[in-house]
Image (cartoon, rainbow, N blue to C red; front, side, top):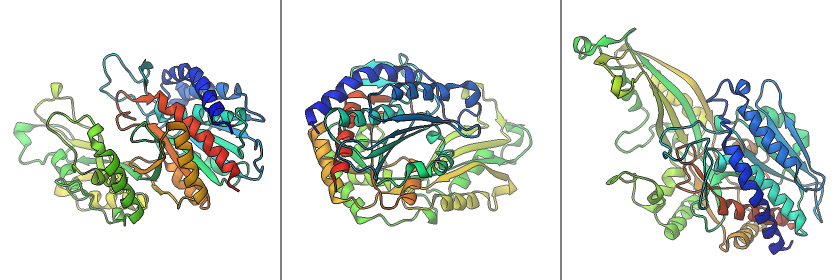
Amino acid sequence: MSLADAAAHVDRSWDDIVPLLHDYIAIPAVSEAYDPDWREHGYIHQAVDLVAEWCRGRAIAGMTVDVIDPPDLSPLVVIEVPAFGDASGDDTALLYGHLDKQPEMEGWRDDLGPWKPVLEGDKLFGRGGADDGYAVFASLTAIEAVQASGGSHTRCIVLIEASEESGSPDLPAHVEALADRIGTPSLVVCLDSGCIDPHRMWVTTSLRGVAMATVTVDIVTEGLHSGDASGMVPDSFRIVRALLDRIENAETGEVLLEACNVDIPDERLDQAHSTADEIGPIAAHYPFVNGAGPTTPHGAGQLISRTWRAALSVVGADGLPPTASAGNVLRPSTSLKLSLRTPPTADAAAALAEMTEKLTTNPPYGARVTISSAGSADGWNAPATAPWLADALDAASNAAFGEPARHFGEGGSIPFMGMLGEAYPEAQFVITGVLLPDSNAHGPNEYLHVPTARRLSTAVAHLLDAHAARA
């Protein structure tokens, strides 16, 4: 494969992709968990139609593009490309991405917004561009670049789902229905992860799992005058605060669940230390208020804490009126939405069960404690890297970025990777992405760093060619 031709093809393609990403960002294709009426609103299908139309226009030999759209599931875009060049037709590479989005979130700059695409220098702002709308464009551009530059690739299956931000609830049914068509991939490429800097290809070695639940504490049946009842009737917020102390040490942030106690592999500890030695403390990239700082100042400790240690976050609340309109009322109820990130090798379902038991057993004052909207997804730890892939990753990163690849653990969750790891234990995995530490996926001012996406497309083309030639 001609390295120069591949890079040139990718650059030409991305000149056309950036305007399409503007159109994609403008679609409020919020994932089903946050928009129960997503089918009626039609935004998910608008995103699917945009993606499918672009795919069908690519100059890729033998490609088919199908939209699987059952009435009881979110749609799935399935792209199949036969083997090309000198590659065997019996082998398969699976490439994965998604097109659903997180909800809007508050705090965007006055000149930005979740559905307002803005290209500012190298940064394309707006919800979903980096997480993960670019993935389908990068995947097919890489395949097309292989073919246009004299390379080879095995049979490729590209899956672009529409429920990942909801935990991929619909994907297992889709994959089961497509099992014969997917076959047994020997390489899985996922473009839904992050990177620490834009200077090389960053390969994700692990992903945390997640356990989600909403805990509600009811103490009385209606609001009461705080001057009349407080001190005698306990505050529902104090009760839920006490319950949280059962599962988290408020001073240290340590999660107090046995299911979250796992051994961290020595290899992952070594990778964290070597990465920190090169890049320094990653938390320096985050927008702390003046005078504030991270849980630990040490770079390796930050990387380990965000990847191999459990962490609890309160991501939503009900029953709390805005401060401007809050009267002196003892509120009858408090609800908190909890997000527990679990270590990669922990049993997330067991962690959820243990968390539920600790929150609901013998509540203070006999309060009524209920758990709702509960769910979990396991994390993932990469299998040992085959020698051919280790060499190919460095070669691809050098060709596209000018630096060898580096490996690091990611703190987020991609539920499909755990499913694939169980389904295809012999496969090699390349999980990578363009989310820089300040790209702020899920939050305000999310952006895609366009040069990184271009270079990563070129790197994936090299990986596909190396995969085809590995025998």
